[in-house]
Length: 67
Image (tube, rainbow, N blue to C red; front, side, top):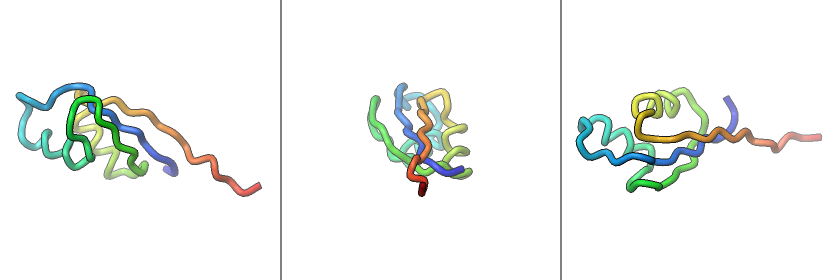
């Protein structure tokens, strides 16, 4: 899984459990429409899956290949 994931907070965390709020915070998201570029790892994908109803994700693959 090489590449990066662009994660954007699209919904407020108010009214959701503290564990989900902490997950959003640990993804580096603070406010609605804040974005973070994160490495595409199993840990990050698991965190995103936990709060998938609050975020949108854009996958971009690294294109720095040696010719």
